[in-house]
Length: 246
Image (cartoon, rainbow, N blue to C red; front, side, top):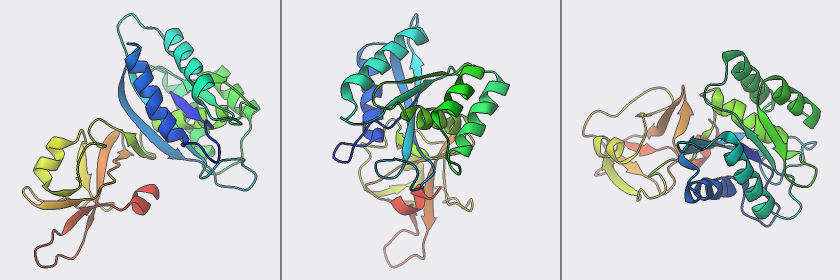
């Protein structure tokens, strides 16, 4: 489920609202949250974004007997009620069993949205042709562009980082053995950008800001290998700036 353009200059960002939407769907008994990823789109003066032109994708598991119509109606209502004044919210939805050709089209659109200026007509045309639910819920409805792009980039399996994943917000900063860290977080790997990994028992310095990357369909905690100093670990979680570059 992709969402975009839900904020204004003085409101919390789309990533924040995406997490509240996960909570709302769970509270209504419609779906269990699996994760939420943040995706960087084109930064260009011609794009009327609020701050960084970021969109968000929510992965959910619907409850037994709950169809997409029910989830879509709830999400649309949430966006209409909670999006900031003056925003142009959009919503995109697909099921996990989307056929490969339709999935490829969504991925291509998402990747194009990182480099090219796109419009609503193109977004709606792609969605209509490939079985993707796409709708606007206020203002100009330009958020449909980023919402569709977020879904495509999440489906690419390698783009952006997790805004929400069970446990990443509650993990306290400090020093952990890599074994304990992997047990505490629902991540599949912990490594540097070049593929270096701590050995069992090695200590990792964890910052207050932990956001695993989405890489090859896996949640990967990005680390940095630093020159060890007396009584300090040689591994630490990657900085916010480094994660946001991925």
